[in-house]
Amino acid sequence: MRAAPVGDRAFESAIPAQVLDRIQHGTMRTTYRSVPFYKSPFDISLYLELLGALAPRTVIEIGTKFGGSALWFADMMTAQGIHSPRVLSIDIEPLSEVVDPRITFITGDAKRLDAVLPLDLLEALRHPLLVVEDSSHMYAESTAVLEFFHPVLETGDYIVVEDGVVNQLSGEQYRRYENGPNRAVADFLAVHGPDYEIDADLCDRFGRNATYNPNGWLRRR
Image 1: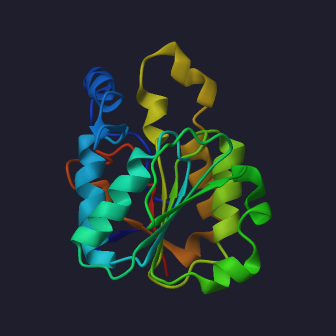
Image 2: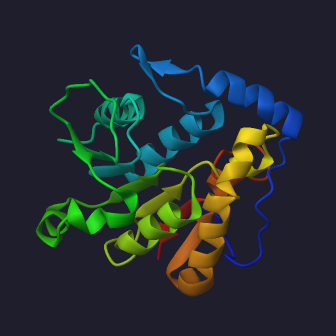
């Protein structure tokens, strides 16, 4: 893994805005096993590489929507030969109809994860952990997720903050996020930077921050 200094990287993606808009159009039409999936082609590839290198025993996803990504994570973990993979998927209003013994769907607020992830459950989770923050894309929620998992993550675990790229999409609907994911990552690393590395190999695999998660692939030192 090539680590990047946490304070030295801009969040802008090398992908031009016009191209990002077209990619977003396709991303919002993606499905997995007939379930809406909503992952960009860059990040599908990057997550596959991370799953192979990290071999997480547990994936915790904040933001379920229809459950396509939870199902994909469970299947890809199984395909990687991970024994008894576990996926916890949390959403304030889950819409998933997926039923899978590897996946636990939990109704909960990203800003109050302590209410649904008590200490005894967290202590029982098998590491390595992969935490995926894909909730509202708002600053308060992304910050709450980062701060909640900070004391939970162990050396080598990953937390990925998704969709900071919304700040570069041209649609007026994306302005409401007020650059939330990127601001949350920047402020979190300003405080906890010595404890994390930005995985530049993943961020820059297809070009500088050619991912929906610019500077958002974070490895716990």
